[in-house]
Length: 382
Image (cartoon, rainbow, N blue to C red; front, side, top):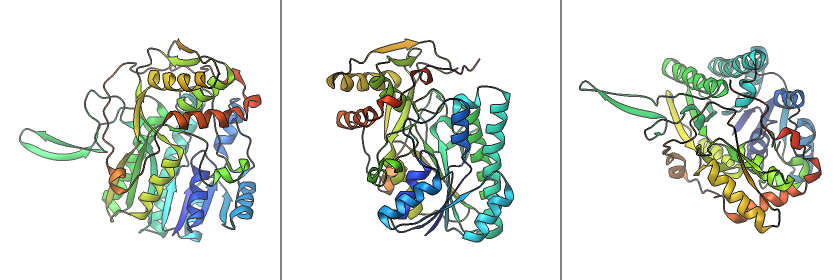
């Protein structure tokens, strides 16, 4: 297939591009380096230095003889988006092109405005470019499990059947996010659902949990092909942050009581899930929602797992509870359905002690790059 990847320089975008190109797809990536620029502006640079997007594509082609086409451009500019879609005519679009940090979106007015304008603007531009030039194209949009919040009932896979006063109807599952970033993802889904109903778009919305890891088959070919691995408080997911803290000798910082429970998945499984969605496109006028995670853990569970393995490796890892900088429930019910991707054939990589051991060893290769000033929370919700 011809696959267009928006946000192709990101932690997920670049591994996805290599993986799909290795499978024989014609891959075209677009990025404007927004995340790289924000990382520099907030002193949140990734642990592993990597070349720019054109450089990565050249290295990948030299090693595999597979090509990833690259365009440096802003998807929030409609003319850029429209030109890319018109010229490439993709069979599918994988949409990662959003400002992905909850803390950044909550750090001030300018950051909130950038998040809102960029995230909704890119989604809106993509919808119209597809409608104008490739109306049968399958849009695969990365959502987030954070859209659901932490309701006191089971979280279904995107939809909820409601019976009220003797009548029944199926609705999008009620969502109540805990940050502006996650709220923009809710609005993405609402925009897409509107245009699915109105014009018959084909859309898969992947509600992804926090991702961890550095390794994929393609990234392991050369350290310069590894993804952006952030460990800071703004862009680093909790697992990646804990791994770096364990190596740096900094106590694993558990926010508040540590009972916050979420669904997690390995980076390799993100690639599986995107491929499964590509290989089973939805019908016209269908919005398919898949909850994309493989295991549920509380923050305390994660800290204890990583500390145990780190201590077995002689790292003397400690755990420390600190004041929670976020406004969130620290103890709550959490039970989310996630059978859709399993039914499509997902074969999960679970977070075993061996996997944690391997990730810690990879982080140890870059121990000298760790800046502990980036780890403790610098953004508060209030």
